Image (tube, rainbow, N blue to C red):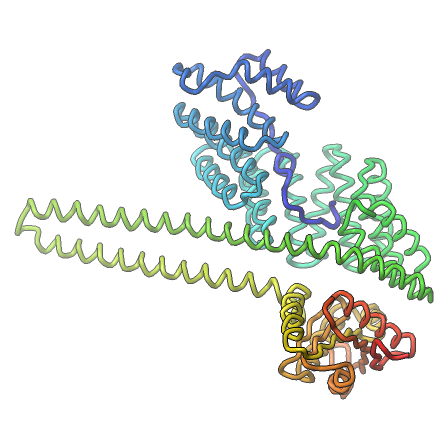
Length: 597
């Protein structure tokens, strides 16, 4: 959806990249009929094209090649859009060969771009990037500005898909600069929307607003109702995140009106959730509850990302309304859904890291090939000069020595650069692995890193027959403090508490930021009675003195829940969470074990 995207294993590249069919000079009747059939009956369109596309070895005339290229391009696009990726890739490869035979750079670039979108649809992002780069190099020697902008935007989409938002932003900015030299407003609008989303991802909601508003103005000027609704929904969400509640009220209502006209369930659910956030920020829990319930009704079993967020927010609203049973029911639903999504997320993370590694490896290989080619050129130049010098004999001995020395220094420089690039690749992979396991705000483990270590520790404790305790902790009344003094102060408190927790635990203990103001501890070789003593030291460390922030010093307390881990980590988390909430209900700032009455 527009306001909260949920990453899936594949992309619909033809729509995302605004790939537009090119003008053709082949038999206009055949092409026109095939285009008319493409949406309503793609199989009939393919059958018509099959009848008029000849085998490769029967093509011999230039005119025939031109006509075949146009028919092949349409067939490759239809095959790609209907999931026939192998056949589509074969057509694209053949189209590239014909374009090279005709010596037509623009047609070659379109074929390379088409081939790249097919590889992306198949999940081969590294291969897609290689094709997009090839198309870009081909187009840079032409005056086809729109095609160059489209390919540059595709590079941004590919890098955004791998999570490399900084590089994606660079490509979107380049594409936007290029497309503004043309009058292609539809492509400009698409690129602007992409750029706005990645800026918000990198720099926060305020930073993304100008690009969203620019895209909205352009869409209104074009009369593009779908893009208008999409951008209004994005702006609504950004305004709520930035706590600009007055502007958000007007914009979110307009966004809801527009997305409901479109009937897009994902957009409507996301906008309803943003409206719930808005009402909650205005301290109107009843109105927030209505919007969250409406969002859940739309998202349930259809939009997992929205469903997870809405369930948690509903639970918090029920808590605020003093409805503990309903809050507990929502938390139980949330835990079941998170458990289901966790397996999907683990598989998705593995795939994402593999794709990101392949992308980095592919780009590094391209750079290394270019360096190697430069090295070979240097060697060839050196060899040629040596041969010429041998013929000229002693007259050019001095010159030959100079050339040989130059060749040696060039080779040494290139070899050093090759070694440096390989070292950078290793560092990049180490960084990817670390970021996947670390919480960016506090520096503690995140959920993924915690789950990896926790599963390993459960197996060790079972082998050794040693007790293992788990503790859930939540900062008391953190939301009120965050709402009153702002997220910057809240972030300072979270970082300071995290440092105090690390100072209070033992060397063998594990602590992670579970999410928001929640933390989880894993205490090896420790039963619940000993765990209470360990956590009392942590609690004393945290409450020993007020936490200094730019808004002043604040005393902070936490409530802890303890549970014994047997074999099921999720069950222990649930028990610790219930114990913690009993502590909350009993007055906060205390430690409660799962077995306590």
